[in-house]
Structure formats: C-alpha cells, structure tokens
Length: 350
Ligand code: KG4
Ligand code: ZN
Image (cartoon, rainbow, N blue to C red; front, side, top):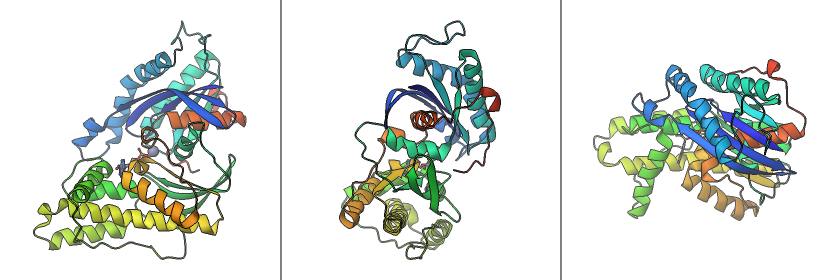
C-alpha cells in the first residue's frame, strides 16, 4: 500500500511517500521545507506568517515528494497509474488552525481529483509512528512511548494499533517549549532545543563540569506527570542573581538540559515498570537531542534490560514520513474516509 503523507501543523511544510507492508513501513521520499529562518527573527513561530508560507510551498513540496518517489505528478488531474498512491494521510491536529487548513484542504483536493480516500492523522500519533519506519523494529506490546515535542510531553501506553492510552503528561510547559523559553532567556536563538544542546556539548567537549544547580521538578512524585514551568523560573532567578551569567552560557545550558533529561528518564523508567511494558520508545522533536537519546538508551538497558527504540534523526522533528507511516496503519484498519468528511481540530487529542 502506497501512502502520500502531508504535514503542515506548525512551521514545516512536508510531504512524503511511504510503502507499507505488514508491520513495517518504508519511506521512498521525504521532503521538508522549513520556515525556521523566517520565524527566527520573531523569536518563535508567528501563526499567520506560518500559514501564509505554507500556501506557496505546499504544492511544490508534494510535487517533489512524488517525483522523488518516481510517481508521475498531477497527470491531467488523473490518478497516476504507474506506482499509484492508494491514499492520502494528512495531519489534522493539534496545531495552528490556519496552518492545518492548508494541508487538509490540499489533501481533500487531491483526494477528490485522484478519487482516492484521505486518512486523518493526529499529529502526536504521527510522532509515535515515526518509530514504525524501517523493517528492523521489534515492537512488543504493551509499549511505553515518551513523546517530547514543542507542544507536548506525554507518556503513552500503547497496547496495539488501536489503543494509545495517555498515562502521564506535563501539567504546564512541554519539554521542547521549556528548551525554547530557556534559550530566549540565555539570549540564544529559536528553536532553543538544538542551540542549548550545542552549548551544553561545548562544556562536555572542554571536559568541564557545570557549577549551576537547577531543580528536577516532580522527579520523585508518585505519578507519571511532568512540570517544567518551575524549572524555567528557577533558571530566570539564577540568571538574575548571577552578574557573570553571560560568561557561563554552556554551564547553564548543560544544567538546564540535564535537569529535563533526568526527569524524562526517571518517569519513563517508572512508567515501563508500572505498566510492565515490553518495549520502550522515544519520539518527538526533543528526541533529536543526542544526550537524551544516549542517556535514555543506557538507562533502559541497565535498569530494564530492553533496547530503546528511537526514530532516525530525520524523523524526530516535524515531517510527513511519520504522518504517512501512521496513515498506513490506519488505512490497514480501514480508518480512511471520504474527502467530504475531513475536518481539522487545532486541539485534537490522541
Ligand atoms: O515535534 P516538533 O518538531 O514540533 C512540535 O510538534 O512541537 O518539536 C519541536 C521542538 C522544539 O521545541 C525544539 O526546540 C525541540 O523540539 N528540539 C530539541 C532539539 N531539536 C528540536 N530539543 C532538544 N534538543 C534538540 N536537539
Ligand atoms: Zn511535532
């Protein structure tokens, strides 16, 4: 089954083609047009600007994804015959309403023109299915999935393709959001996660230790929830007290990153034990963080004797390959719909 995936939830315009077979998905093309350089100067994503940028980008991005997958693009409005697409998967929420609309309306138009069904995909569900890309994944259920992005920090208990239960979540800021806000305080650019990671790595490379101490909120709490807002405030107070902070940016970056990693790891291990999970997965934009990948992998091995499953780096931050992957599994379960019934929901939950 061949699926065209479309993703426009936030500031990436993305399209991908996936081929699904049984329990594995192969990506045959993956195109992303990022708007990061446009939003950088505002210090964050400006919703109206994001939507306007998606409009001229969406069709060229889809066209490129089809060409890269050797599919004849838009042949007189007819469904391409050779290597034809079977269904279109599109992210329908959560996300920025006007951005989501661009992807959804494009998916509907193609669905009508090509006479193939559309598959609505929840964005977080997409992140989860980034872990199903590739043929080497040995996923057993129940599986605990730590999903960490700019908008969400969730622990999910996956009991199978039809059951994704949220067992823990952030009570305030998401992990990615905390990275972005901390970077702003430190005078670093948007998005904050990758810059903080780079600064933190400078300290490690120099073989130095951080002299900063920040709290690990909710580390020992009996539930599986998170809270990162207090950590952000603790950083703010520490910077206000420290007249020399501009000379210690790698130290602050290192400690802030480690505080987040410590809590994420502790809660993921607890969730796996509590729910007797047989697989542990990490996903979402923050899963691009190399320290988090490495430290979680080591802890999952040493404490649980399991191999952590993580997506390739290119499938961590927003992309359409993950949407196509989720779409394949939904199509397999007959979750495709008629284009007339496709709607978006900017607060759509799992
Ligand atoms: O999944 P994603 O692309 O978009 C949302 O669904 O929100 O995640 C974006 C988030 C941003 O907050 C960004 O700062 C964070 O992922 N991020 C990182 C890294 N790369 C991206 N956080 C920590 N370390 C990174 N290397
Ligand atoms: Zn995302």
